[in-house]
Length: 502
Image 1: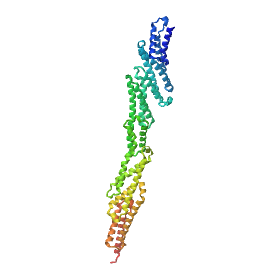
Image 2: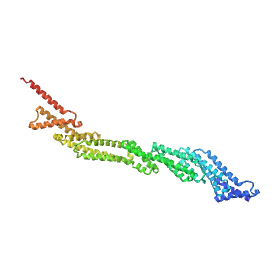
Image 3: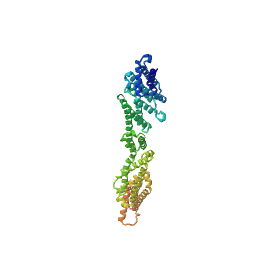
Image 4: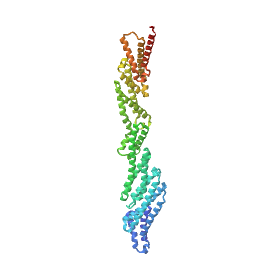
């Protein structure tokens, strides 16, 4: 009875591992050796049973039972919980196998134990990978943990604890397939919507999983799997970074082309990336994304500075050339750009629109002062001075007219502009009256030289008037009207002469 009690105790020590009652390895070794020794004891004491072989047989049966139970697990949260229990049971068998191979290698059929261990581990890991692939990615486990991440962590930990180097890399094919699916999802999202929350979530998952398996799959047979998992993350990250880098260039191009709504959308993507997945951005890319909001001012400031310099120079302009024409065109284009920019509220999320409002206000004030300066100069001229500076006066008037095509500037300068129109109308009216009065002999008493000079100035101004901007001078052909009047008077004189009796 005492011997059989020892036999039973030894059996319980070994087989209890399968129930989670793990002894010290030294106790396991002692129990196995005792069971082995019973074969040499008299059968009338220990019976006819081969106790050691029975223990081995029950171990293999336990592994086979776990394999069968693994095969019928369903791909849902309940199946995940069941898999966790089976992996725990499988870990118990692997502890038995490890103790057997390490402590009593001569007492166990090592090939059978190692083969059973490999098959069981491959079945459990393979089933875990299969469930992983079947999940949609939004399922949750306990405590708000994503089910897929919980499951892949469970798989990684099981492999980490696997005591042998004979596990087949193919058991992780489903994990590789799942990682590849995540990579594809990231690539698709990056090409369709860089603001998708899926990008940051998937990149983080892939990064964590890659690091997790890099630490676990250190054995040579599995190192290729670790490399594949890392490669999938690298590929997904590369796709996102390339799209973001392109996004920066396109946003700048959109701004240059005044496509401000599209520009704002791309800037949203840049901001989203910096906020939600900064750790997955390339070292040189993140600063570019963060500085993208500075680009509008960088693009607009040189144009603004050039225009302020132009308007400042016009205060002392001699009016001797039409070099102002391209500058005024730039002014109107810049003003329109500011109008469109300030209307796009989305741009305000990334750049201070008040800066551009201030630019427009400054340009309006400078343009108004420029117009007032030209108006004051024109209105201060006598008829003789106008004729002497006719070319520059024409340029000054043309500048006023060109600037006033902007409705805001037209409103700001309306009073001064009307002064110019009235002033020139007065000059024309005076010249017409002078020219006609001379023809009719109605001019005031003066020397012939003075009359001739006044008449000549009047005719010169009337002749020059059509060359000046019609918006100021009008379109009436004053010179032609005086000529017609002269012809009528001459005809009347000729008729009177013909009527004189001979």
